[in-house]
Structure formats: C-alpha cells, structure tokens
Length: 129
Image 1 (tube, rainbow, N blue to C red):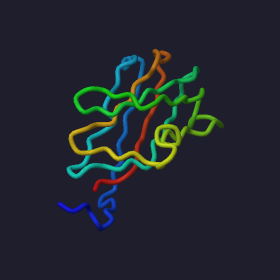
Image 2: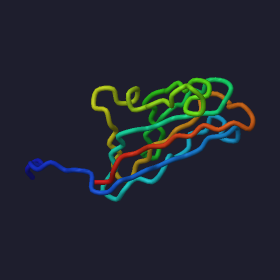
Image 3: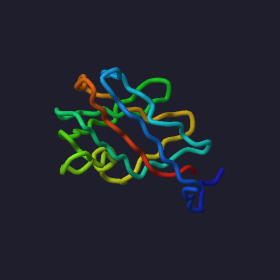
Image 4: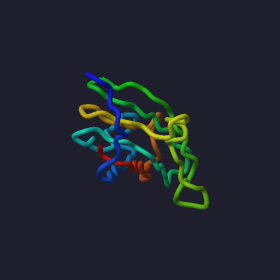
C-alpha cells in the first residue's frame, strides 16, 4: 500500500485535564481519553498552588507506562506572579507537539508527594484526527 500523500489535519478540538492532589501521590493518572483516530497534543499547561515545587513525570501508556520526561512546576506557577509552565517545550522540543495513537493514553504523576490541601492542574489542548 502506498504511503499517505495528503496532509491530515486535526478535525475536532480536544481539551483534556486532570487535577492532582496529595491523594494522587506518585501514581500516574490518565489526563484524558484519546480520539477514535488519535489525538495531537499541541500544549500542556501546568499550574500549582503548592508551596513547594512540583515535578511531574509524563508517560505514554500502551498497556504499560513508558516514561517521556519530567517537568518542573515552580512554587505557585499560574496562581501567583509566576507564569504557568508549558510542558510541550520539554516533552517534544523538536516537533512542538505529541501525537497519541488510538489505544494509548497520556499520563502524568507527581515524582514526590504534594503538600496537603494543595493542587496541581494539568491541561492538554490539541485536536482529534
């Protein structure tokens, strides 16, 4: 079969999000569902109201977690005068996006336990093919 000769574009906007708390200690959680024909993630915005920096480990899961990188979210990112963190620049520095096929998921977890009563939000934006 011949390779695709036509460009394929995102057909539907997709926004995925998850909030991590102390109860999610170091357990990777799925950020959201992937579209029927796959999803392209163009941005992953990370913010926290934690009083200590939060390191987030990202994984692609095909039944097993495959580590793709860690992103540091400084104290108060997105909640104070500290800007929220764009994770794509760390996770996909060359392409500037991640493509997640159908049947796989994008997951995130804290590297260490968060502070009690604090939250970290991870919001991914892109589109379904």
